[in-house]
Amino acid sequence: MLRFLTAGESHGPGLVAILEGLPAGVAVSEAAIREDLARRQAGYGRGGRMKIETDYAVIQSGVRHGRTLGSPISLLIENRDFSTGNGPDGKPWTHTMSKEPVEDEVTPIHRLRPGHADTPGIAKYAAEDARDILERSSARESTARVAVGAVCRAFLAEFGIEVHSHVTNIGGVEARSVEPIDWAAVEASPVRCADPVASKAMTEAIDAAREDGDSVGGIIEVIATGAPIGLGSHIQWDTKLSTKLIAAVGSLNAVKGVEFGTGFAQANERGSKVHDVIKPTEEWERKPDGSWARPWPRRSNNAGGLEGGMTTGEPLVVRAVVKPIATLRAPLPTVDTATGEPAEAHYERSDVTFVPTCGVIGEAMVLITLAEAMLEKFGGDHVDETKRNHAAYLATVGPRTSAAPTRTRANKASG
Ligand SMILES: Cc1cc2nc3c(=O)[nH]c(=O)nc-3n(C[C@H](O)[C@H](O)[C@H](O)COP(=O)(O)O)c2cc1C
Image 1 (tube, protein in one colour):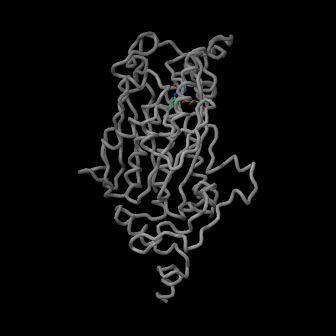
Image 2 (cartoon, protein in one colour):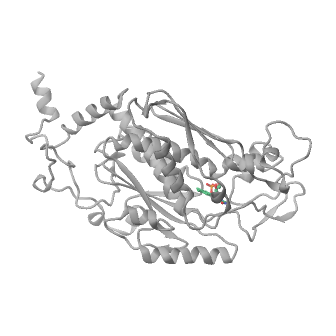
Image 3 (tube, protein in one colour):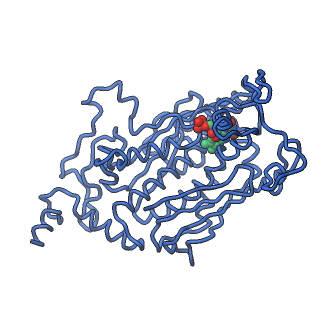
């Protein structure tokens, strides 16, 4: 079983992640993790913190001589802010976030910020200071998820599985559909958008919101290619890959909806236009070794690569809508918890949008979910074992009458 946990507060000493269940033999490096962490930190519309932090995950365990050992992989990401920066009232973060009681009082946050975890959090955890809540609810935590996702990316690469993301909407500016997507161009776009015209309009929408002290949301799309047919299961509600992906991507801060393929737009179409027709075998492609490149291919992929909670072998397409940032320079009206009187919401350094970054975090969650699904299906204590199981399975998934070995024939041969 693959599982992971993160720990750490936004302005504490750092973040910790533990990933357990990855087989031995996977090539993992801090440099590769750093690449994804750098992608998370980029993006037009982000502010001060990204200039302070240069995130780096130090591998503490589970890797030796560049390969995983099969033991828990632990990662430590320092919050540089903590040791070098000043927090509220000009006091160092080491004071504001001190583990020990402090004599010199820290000004508590009483003016709750609508749209954040502040209000339900202080009620539920009996907190006097909303900082007790916001330090953990902050999306800084997603840095640890991106680091874990980068490790899973290395594992999935062994099977030819790639995961990318792009932005399709910021502040109501819709990108045109671009086919095929040039991923290098997406990475070069300041808003991680494949459509250069929309890219420019998106940056203008961000600038306009900044001028007004406001914020904008948008839509991200994560695309995974190379996943074999049959990951997940139709057997129980919680074994469906669709369930796991909705939970994983929906767990991102600020995500308000998740859809697959053409998703919600299917409400406007008839069934004959929606469902993905299967191509006859004469149109299937073979690999040089004679096996099918992709068994049971479709003429379209409106389902986003999932049917009955299982992968179809078509690209997995997951989209998420991200709400606009809740902390506004022109603050929202709120209530002061100390007095119960109306007040302006607390303002703490905040971005105008984080939609481009959400794509990178969405990738991480899809990477982790796919790695888990691959290990559930193929197992293996060493990645070579996983690969053998994967290859043996792929040899059986074509048509039952083909010259390729099928389950039926193998069963007959063994009596
Ligand atoms: C990458 C990223 C960066 C974020 N940065 C900010 C920010 O600067 N200011 C802010 O108010 N919210 C920010 N958020 C959103 C809050 O984390 C989120 O809205 C808050 O946890 C409320 O939770 P919910 O909307 O998910 O229910 C960010 C979210 C993500 C994913």
